[in-house]
Image (cartoon, rainbow, N blue to C red):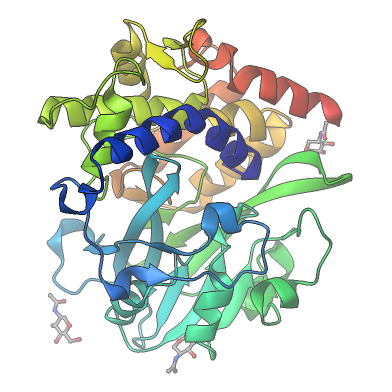
Amino acid sequence: MCLLFGLVLFCLALGYERGRAAAVLSTCGVSNSNALELVFNEKQQYVQKFPTLFAPLYGEAFKKTIKRSLEPNNNANTTIWAVEQNLELGPLQTPIRCVVVRLKNGSLWVHAPLAPTQEFFELVESCGEKVAHIVVPTYALEHKVFVKDALQRWPDAKLWTSPGQFSFPFDVSEEFVFGKRVDGVLDAKSHPLIPWSDEIDYATLAGGTFDIGGKPTTLFETAFLHKASKSLIVTDAVAQIPKTVPPLNNPENLLLISKLSTADPMPDDTPSSRLIGWEKTALLVSYFFPEHEEFDPKKLGVVTWTEGWHDNFNALAGRLIVPPVVRTLIYAQNRSRVGEWVDEVVERWEFDQIVPAHFEAPIKATSRDFANAFLFLKDDTVDAFPENDLARGLRPIADAALKVL
Ligand SMILES: *[C@@H]1O[C@H](CO)[C@@H](O)[C@H](O)[C@H]1NC(C)=O
Ligand SMILES: *[C@@H]1O[C@H](CO)[C@@H](O)[C@H](O)[C@H]1NC(C)=O
Ligand SMILES: *[C@@H]1O[C@H](CO)[C@@H](O)[C@H](O)[C@H]1NC(C)=O
């Protein structure tokens, strides 16, 4: 999931954004007392400091954060937590996760920090003594855009990044982007120098190489093994979309997305409407333009859903997958290279659970389950997503991107 993904998604969400504006207007200024609207407090506000173009997507906002233990077997002495917010594009909200590990000496290792609210910082700090390490695990914007803010909060933390942190569309120094020199790049060479490597191992994948801003750019992702909890920590490589509504999703947005047609009035707030909103949200963020989502030929900007999307949601959710965007776009270019990385993860590491940065966590899964999620590398028909879900959104985008290089 990358910038491209975000922008396309954003455009598609516009139909809904108009619907939302209309919905808010129709309440004639009483929207603040609407029971469905979340009430935020000061600790949930942030202004993002990344030098940026991305202000419309990532600027100033309110965000709620929650913290959960990821320790398996209810071990009372937790050493690993999920700290979660919503990733938002227009009204589409999905869970995004920062993983915090407490090292043996009590200091903290923080993977992909989130929006810099006071609440986020305090929840991370409550996991241990001092943030000693911040890790940027991929090229993908949503997992690194807040690192500069995190480093301002924890100025003594060391910064570790996966290779190839490009600065599209301008070539600026990493120091400018992160506000600090990178202490180490997570390629094979620096391995023995990394202070946490006894407790957390890593393996870096070079995904596809794409022409971004006129230069060939390889998209890397680093996976980690937290040995104490036997957790595989990944960013985008695999995920499991929950079949139930995640805890942070705003009911108002879910009801908006649940509508059969964006021109319909807001439905009543029922658990089943919320769930329908979640199912459509998952389809939209996974495929951009899923089957059964149709533009009204007569009314510009009106989107109507046709029968069948629920089955397509069931084909997508509730199982460990390489998400459609990653499988179709990023991993499609050099399958043997992806396969080598999968073999490395499977051969080197033993784990009981997987903690991705998106959707559910932890996912009970072993190295065999992980390997099975990648069987498509050898045979595309294995576990294929519905072709009609891919046909109008992801497939043409992937074909265009893969043709460039
Ligand atoms: C938890 O940690 C404390 C202090 O480090 C220790 O005394 C205790 O035995 C641990 N409990 C378990 C169940 O490991
Ligand atoms: C704790 O251990 C980590 C990893 O070995 C190290 O980087 C960090 O500086 C240590 N913290 C303290 C307070 O000694
Ligand atoms: C794919 O990656 C392998 C390294 O695993 C490399 O030898 C090969 O040249 C790559 N193929 C393409 C088409 O880039």
